[in-house]
Image (tube, rainbow, N blue to C red; front, side, top):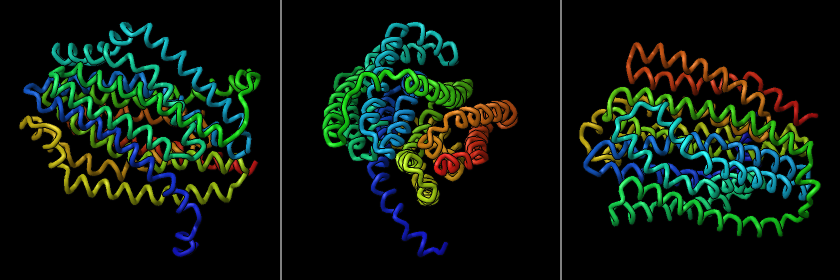
Length: 442
């Protein structure tokens, strides 16, 4: 294919129509995390940063572990949309919302146990752990809204209406930032203020999301059909796929949790520096995920319509633009990395320690892009077993690298192991990619 022919493919326009709202909405998520860090980072003690970092990490386990509520919903809705089955689109959404409600109820009941187990895994100081507990017991009440919002985001991406996802996400994160500043700086609530701002914003965002969903369903058509919603075969398929994604996501989150736990052994200053730099990872991840999310909806629709040629075009186009954006992230971190660190914390020893690790963050977008992009392809194809198996292999390689490289190079070795993790995630799924194209030809 010639260069001019490549850039004339219709998927370029479709990709950017879907991507720009996702990039804006996703970028607001780490912006919120950065504001959280900046607000407590300018308090007088480093342990405030550590408390928010550990508290947020616990919710990474609790919420990201149930990320299948978005990913599984996206894949199934995209497939149903490609097949033109509006009633099944409604049924997938209903199943996801029912499941999210059950999970949220269990999380609220078991909250003391969840916190106790989480703090056992993380070796922080007494001050850090105390602040993390305060954060947890306030933010946990946003759990029902968060998990339901995952299902709604999966619905929006699956029907390829990423502008709706943008509206909800921007509303939630903008409100969160405003409440952050009000509660922490205005009222002096410190860590509790950060958690309260988040929980309130998540709950109000759910109401907005449900209103937009109602409008979308009127346009899509179909009917609410109890027998379809509670179909044993489809519910079993949903649970099987979601369990695979759950295993994959738990290993992913544990990998980052273990990274933070190992960094905490270097003391509060090193932990605070890592917490600051993890905002760089979050900015990168949420930006690059825009192309993965676009691929999810487009890939699922192409497979549902049995268009192998369209699938291949989508993979090429989304992969190309994702690489371009990854290069821009690396360039931005190279030029502005130190300035960003200075904005996130005013503690000089934390700044110096973070700048020491900055070269790893400049490299990370160029390495990580492939794992994010191929994840989106497999989510859209609902190839959950391959994702689960690839993550298991990658996690084993990562843990080996953490102990070998961490032992040799200290905290620098931990960053090197993270690079190994990203590379293995991409390679393990690339090896079985032909199965995705096989689905589109069946």
